[in-house]
Image 1 (cartoon, rainbow, N blue to C red):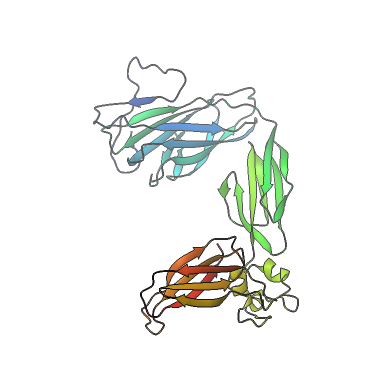
Image 2: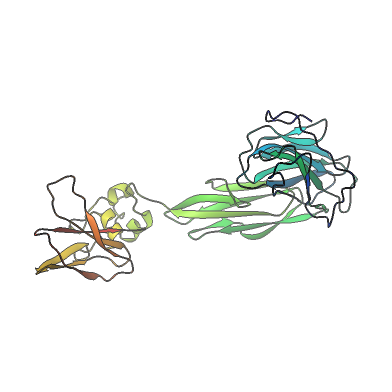
Length: 363
């Protein structure tokens, strides 16, 4: 059999007397083996419930040793004779060979595990559990010849209803929420509503991030699904949260948040964005990040400053303000929650001159 990937022909076959044991994943190694030919691989697949007639989706995964390179992969589903492979998508650009009902991978096989999904058309007249198997033929760079592995049998059952679990993070909600029951093959729509000064950051469908959106619709639901919405705060141009600017009353006379964060309404020398970073009150002149005193006694210097209580603080020093190549050096980091007034004793100094500054930031 000629497989994609430009590695030549590969021969597969089951050796005489081979026995499948315990219905578990089995590994079949063919041909002359190099020392590392018996590589550890796993293949698995999961099918949702089916309806007849209808379409069923099957999720598949093939994994191998992390230090190996996968050269070729071929997946042959086992299912009732009249069922028909429709399409496949995922890692390695899987495609359907319509003549043999095999799934071939025409793209680069760089993912480990290789994760993909295929869909099957189910004709009328089927009832009860139906078998679903999968035989996987592959070749790794450590192998002289190709090998084969089976995925565990996974029977499919007739399903009439499915559940969609809908959840949301703080600062907003999803409608409907909780457990939503949907008929097999049915649809369901979900709307995302952020709180004021927030927005939809991410929507995760079946734990896969599909980006930001205000609504999402499931169609042709054939198995249980999940949807989760994550909200994030709106930020002004310099990174100040809009909700904080509004809570401080800085947007009462303007809806321009970027302008509001640059105002210094209490005239303490700190614009609003700097008061946010240092966790001080932008409307209170006495609430500000400021060095209160620097006192030297012998070889020691005591520095005292004030600021907020919920921001990180760093005391830094340097010897020269004129030399542009000189760097500020942190000598103390204050982790929140902090006191409103902090002092630090810088000991055993030898330099005749030092400059100090205090930085504050949010994480």
